[in-house]
Image (cartoon, rainbow, N blue to C red; front, side, top):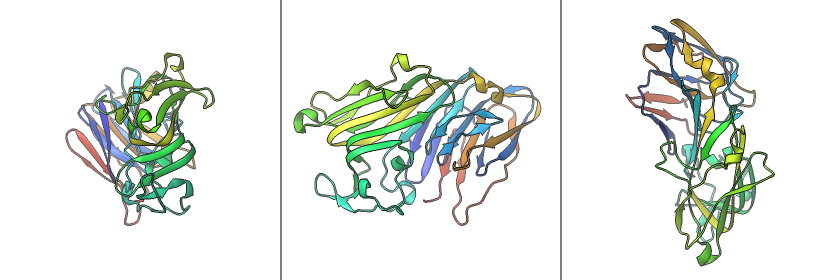
Length: 320
C-alpha cells in the first residue's frame, strides 16, 4: 500500500514494504541494470516527477500519460496501482502567485482565465485536460481552487481499469470540496466517461453541504477501459480542497518486468519527445540492487534530490 503526499516542493511516497533501491531518470532513452542474487519477483514502481507521455520500460508501455507527481506500482500478482493527488497548493514548487483579480469574497486572487502566458503554472493547470469555466481562481491565503463550470481530468492508462476511486490509496483521504447548494444555490456533480462525450453521474452534492468528502467510484460498466475522464461540474463558485484518484489496473502484460534472473537484468526507459523524461524508479525485493545509476542530465543549480529511509522516499523537486 502506498500514500502519496504532496507539499510545496516535496513528494513523499510511503510504502509499507521494504525498499530495496531507487534511481532517477532524466533522459530518454535511459538505461539501468538491476543485479539479483538469485531469481526474484520484485515490486516495481515509477513516479512522474513531471508529466510523462508514453513512458515505456523494455518496450512495455507503462501508461499513456502520467500526470505530474503521479505514481504506478506494479505487483507480482499481476495488478498495478495508480495514484494521483493535488492539494491545490498556491506556491507549488516555489511558484509566486499572480494576484491579478479578486475572488467571490473580494479578496486578492489569481484569475486563471486571464493568466499571463509566461507565469509559472499551479499543479492543476499542468495536469487538467479541459476547462470550461466562467470562474477559476485561487485566493491569496488558502490552498483551494474556486471554480464555476466544468473541470475535466483525463487519465490514460496502458492497462484495463479494475476499479477507480476518488480517494487515496489507503482510503484515509478523499477528494474534498465545499458546496452549500441549499444555502447559497451551489450544486456540484461529478461525472465519469470513457470517451469524454458520454457521461455517467457518479456523485452529487446534497443536504446542507459545507466541507464534504466525496464517496465516488467508477461505474461497473466502465471497468476494462484504458482511458477514464472525470468531470467536476459546479455552479456559483464551488471549492475544491483536495483531489485524490486511485485506480487498480489489470497489468499482467507487465509481469516480465518483475521477474528477475540471477545476475544482471537490463532495463531501458523511453518516453515521447514531448514528455519531461523525468521519472523516479524504485523497487522492492530481497537481494536486488542497481549495478549503476543511469546516465542523466544535471540541471544547473537546481537538482532533484532523493532521500531514503527504511520506509520512506522523499523527492525534493527544484523550484519551477
